[in-house]
Length: 141
Image 1 (cartoon, rainbow, N blue to C red):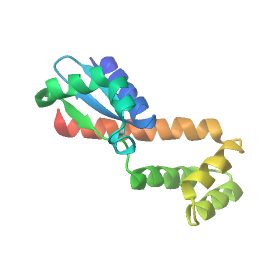
Image 2 (tube, one colour; image 1 turned 135 degrees about the horizontal axis):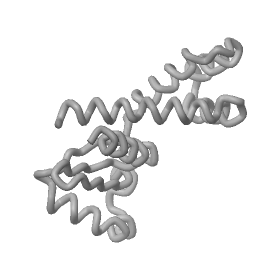
Image 3 (cartoon, helix red, strand yellow; image 1 turned 45 degrees about the vertical axis):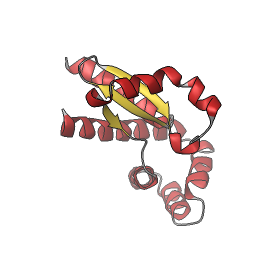
């Protein structure tokens, strides 16, 4: 059971990382991921493409647990935590400076992509998102 819960958490975290809101049905263990609607409020093509998912959410609304995409502040905190744990003090300082200037998300991504810490960043970020998902599920289930 623990392994399936771990897989569930990973799947939800992946959906969130891709920018999708997740709906989880604990009875069927089904996960429905739909990209954030705020970006496509009245886009007919979007609604047609996700028609089945939207209908499944509407039909099973009473049984679903909604897990929203991370808020900007949550993502920013993950970036701060990553910077804090970097052993390379020069790169750590560079990241902290980036986080205190304009366009921190864009500039952080650029700095990470150009560094030797890119793989470490993705492992760290995934672990943090999984913790957030696990905490949300523990509160509800």
